[in-house]
Length: 104
Image (cartoon, rainbow, N blue to C red):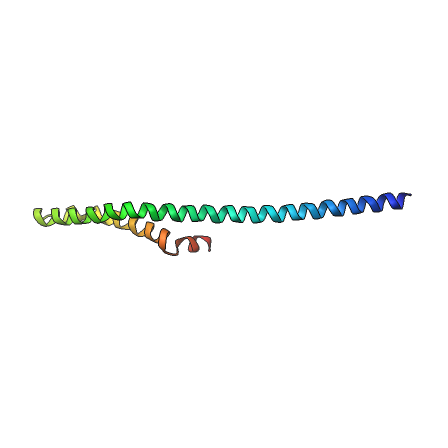
């Protein structure tokens, strides 16, 4: 009698373990899917931001260059440097390999 009871408990335990293993696998798949969607959203947001920032950067570069030439003062061009770094970073994030390098 005890043998039958322990066999039934072992079968039940194995069933529960299998169910937990399947549930864990499903959770891992879901987490990976969520992470991939978040990454895709981040890339899409960066690309959209880059459109507006690229326009701002281009106009700023033209206006600052024109102002530096008219006033004969090259110091007016200094804001282009940090704006260029931000533009480069955003471009690398949206169209380059920054995300792959961050994962590595």
